[in-house]
Image 1 (cartoon, rainbow, N blue to C red):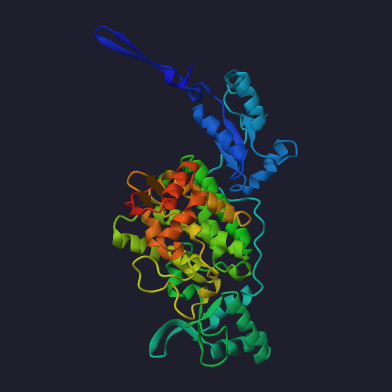
Image 2 (image 1 turned 90 degrees about the horizontal axis):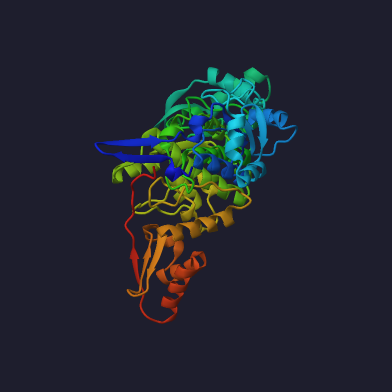
Length: 499
């Protein structure tokens, strides 16, 4: 029976009888499970098929539940290839097997045969909220951690007067030198070198960022005492003292978990995001835990494309986290707080959604209606800004609204091509339109707000042609070539949430 025929209405004089056939999921007593990875086309096809059939299923994404990959290999005879579908405890196969059975018309019969009984305990277990990884790689303790823990206990942490300002929770370089000379029984030169290493590893910072570490009347803070860091949403009162993983690895893992979240809790086209279910999910719990690995990562070793993808992804992940933690902003003042006050501690410094977008990705340019640049002269974060602004970033950054580009995550290897694809999708889905009779081009207000990145209006139209579909490109080319005037109208921006 086709889905539209599943409910039948029978009209009898004086009464109405509605007969509703049981869905496939109501007939099934067992459990469908499948192992997947993030951003896997075959996995998406399997997921879509089960949803269209109205079948409940358990998905085990081994990019999220990395300890389950060993189980997949054991259950599938030595292969980690995905997707792998299980009916109860029986391996069915991957997308090829599913397509074969579906095309032959035998899927429903096989489903009843294999899932006609309740699921046994031998079947793949569903992920459980709060379940901690049993097979995570062992965290490596930073070689300097014993020293820093000793200093936290022994140094006199006080508020000091410096440059006519009260500087809170700090200690002097000379105090640290004297304490370490006694503790390590070594010379002053060796201790100063240790201080510089602690600074490079972001255990301590000069209170005004003026030097790495020097002896004398210079004041420093522990990273956890920085005022901005204490309000960061990936900070839980203490810094991550483990040896930092590489920024590339942490960034990729965060992006894969966020991609898995979208695959489970967003519409297929990513235009609608179910923030409520994300909040309660095990995937999001793991994302929040992993975000603590960002505290002291070394961002300066990233290549240009790695850094580009890292900050694009971090921006989009932080927007999702911010909506969950503080809610979607309603008005102008709420939006200002949302984009400026929600921060992460990354590589030793606090970053807001705004500083990532306007400071890092836009080469420290002022945001719309802002009078100041995100980073002042001397700010250490200036060392990470993009050398030049790529206007395509505006189609890869999502701010959780209906007029925003749809949320996505990028790879270092393909970030440029993926941004071009994002631009084409944005213009195709209402970001640009042409009315030939009125000689008018309708553009997203994003282009008006960030016109410094796109150039003059005529340059924008010419640049845009390569990202339009054939119809819109033809209409725009016709208007530009006939020598007549072109009116540009900027569309109203819909700030309502993409939920």
